[in-house]
Image (tube, rainbow, N blue to C red; front, side, top):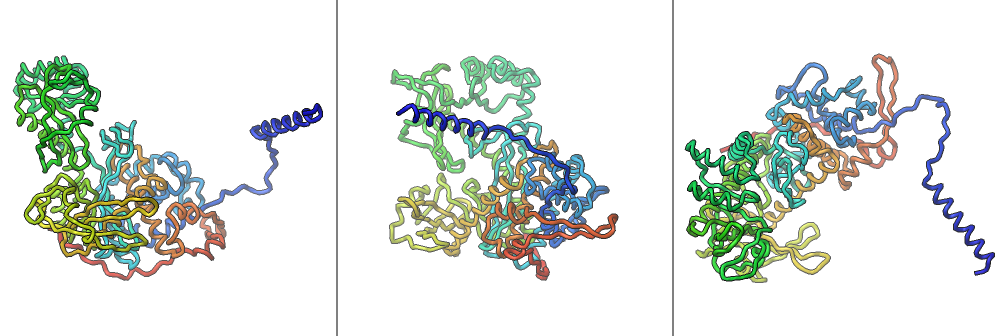
Length: 631
């Protein structure tokens, strides 16, 4: 390269460096005096939400259930909280700061200002029962409009969702739960929900916060008593001293479960002297040497490689157990027992002293698992039954109830049918005894009974499903229909296979599948309200406040569904698009006349009027039907 070319190249690179430097420098702005007062660009959201509120008659619903107070009316509080996610607020505190920026909202609600305590106190003074009663009136109103009325072929969906609150130990309902999305144990709340769906629409029904039941409360009381007595659970000597005192007072525990640092030789030896039975729960890092072997192995490796020849099944619990024999460990010589959850294959290693009989070891594990299962099931399942009852009282006419596999519990399914639902459809679960033609099978063993000719193709919404069925007997439920589903993947090789259980033997196979697919609507609702409607962004130490804020997040989703039904061109747009482009459209807000009592005009842009239009409200002419009889 010549000197002249080098000089040109140097200038070029210097120019590039200068441009890059200037690109990231802040630029000075000139300031001039405005010729007129700046005006905020108001949005159409407040008017549209207010119109839906008015057309549903929700002011009257507040009166009917006894929700009212002096000062800021509850209609204003509820509308403001419904707008929380639509306005982009991440907390009630931030919402209060955004309200004064919405001129349309201030004019519509005749607000001159808003204080944070007005929202918190207002939501907190309404009881959960009143919130549910108001929601019931809203749902009854939907049953009077032909576009929103529930249909017999529709489905009521029951499900739960989790909200993680790592630092919210003072929030009511927060407890340690297993976060399915992150596969970890963490502090959070579990919310139980019911949802209606048919082929044309879906909307939330009722919800409840799960709070620990009596068993969990008793367990926490024991832990609290230990802390009050100065017992450090990480120090075996202190735990042993506490248990010795309990024995002296005539209150010995039925079984002591040990894990972590409490699973030590000091504690197990002390329990043996006290004559107290114990059960150890091994973590994956503990090391054992199996009898007859020299190599030390971690529990994680042992569980992964174990291939027991003989299992003992506890069908009601959904577990099976295998005795693994003796092994030496830091505790000395112990007996190992493997427990496997039959539905998902997850294994846990338990241990006892070698003097404990094999049957007694399994009995202890069964007792611990039964307690854990009862704690979880009783609260959530009873809450779900209450929500289903409320749905029927609100005149929901759906004959179908659908749940995910977790709810596959015979007594619960029977209870749902007794409420008045004609059938329950749910994913079948392994670990139960299915009797076919007099022979007992587990769920995976039923697939080989069906050859390829047993499966018939069905087309549904652009997908092809291959369906077959068997009528089997299930303990406590009697005869049920199992629908075996094969769905070929569209973009890769392979087939998705699963089994649905339907309590109605005469219900068509395709209808069973359709009800199951409608269950996905509640998952869509979860995604939408968590992303766009501030669902789960509660922080109050009052249950009523958090309940009201969460319920109104679901009402916001319901309002968007109503916009889809009343503005036909919106039917093919996503909820996120409707929120961003339709609800939050910029409008012109004009006032005229007497400043003390002005006339307001809201001017929507021409493209919105021409391409979409405003909601078309029809008269609510359908009579309210009587709810189904509740047994």
